[in-house]
Length: 107
Image (cartoon, rainbow, N blue to C red; front, side, top):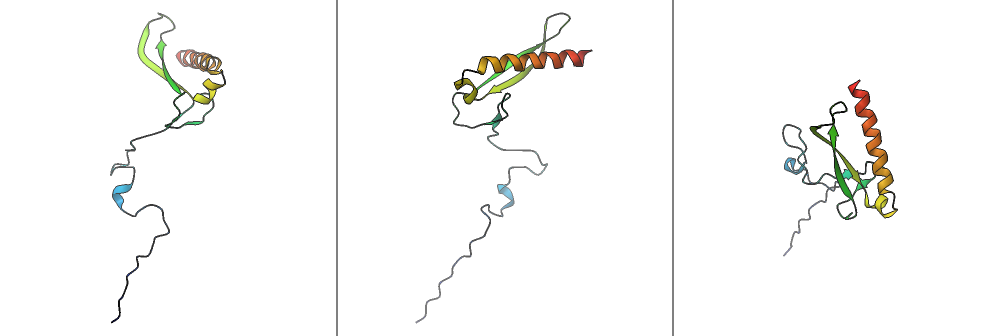
């Protein structure tokens, strides 16, 4: 009595060919559950396990009246920068550069 064993051929791709496993819907919109942030100072990716990282939203202010415009700018700093005690310097430089850019766009 012969026994025939079927072996499944493994595909060379690490991802299945199922169309429902893509991270975009039919309209091409991104539907990822987690999108990593980038550090605003170093452009490093901030990993999910980086518990020392922060994201600070800075209010946009009208330069003439000094009132809040209802918009804000987000800055993300990696735990690496904060660990090196350069977070304050980086945040100040980022906000000053953003202020100059906002003033130039107003003129």
